[in-house]
Length: 444
Ligand SMILES: [Zn+2]
Image (cartoon, rainbow, N blue to C red; front, side):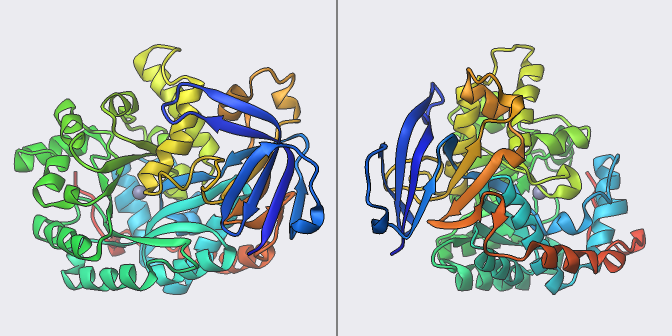
């Protein structure tokens, strides 16, 4: 197994409860194979005992960020659905544009998005999209970690559940364990009860979880209540979806009763603060979820709503929007915000004891951050700088599963210029817009 030494670093330690942040000075982080072997004060070592030695003097070692809900290949349409309401965003723009998608596009879109994630220190992603064998190929090639769900709509018929279940089976544990799989029905408003019930049964049988959009807006909750007399979360409860571990994307329309319901299940919330702001929608009750003990993790959603896959933006906007919504500057203090970004996201992602901390025994998904930039000076409060000041280019080096994938901003596993050229060569075909040819209709 290859051995890596990160020498002379500062190390970020965040308490799981969010009560404090500690910066350990002058530390060595030893990585053996996929895992962190030790974190201890810098000591004299024989470099010949290591395959790679990184002198991290002046750098902060932090856990790689985890994106709990994304549609990474949607980078293919970045910038094509701006200044739109959620109805127009789906019906006139996104769902007609996705009619142009071909399987090979997913591979190149996934690669471009994974590059963007690595460049901003995001090492894992729970992705929810189409043609996922092509997404898996990209994840394997670039060396990222991913939890992949093959998205499906109820209108595709029950056979689609079998097809996506085959993907979940075939790719579970792929890329030396860096890929895990999950079932991915789109939402309660695009999948009827029989479809959700059948999906939950297959997920139980395969021993995997479910990743789904739910209660994205208060309006969806009202519409469900009018049509059915129950909320979208109650639909998930009644169809058995909540009986397996779930990633629930957004949940901005949760009622107080929904929050009490979620307390009883193994579930986590993927929170994409920037997307809600851009669509002019209400943000999620993060404070109330946390108070009820429901895990919350960071998410980008797709970049057609979120513009970037930079989770530092999500982190910052989550803290700011929760302060604004409660009218209190004390809301979501720095340590708790960082606990959501690390331990919280790892829990939602389903690997709480392996990801989200620089701790011996954990998987070696690490980022080296340079805090010497003017926008951090003079540096009194590293935690505050991470939440409110950091620019994604401050991330200098990224390690995933013990492998260095970016060193001093140079990508080591992929030719970025080729990926950008491939995506650009698809722009004309992918941007063709015929609203009559949408893949779904949004009616909420
Ligand atoms: Zn989404």
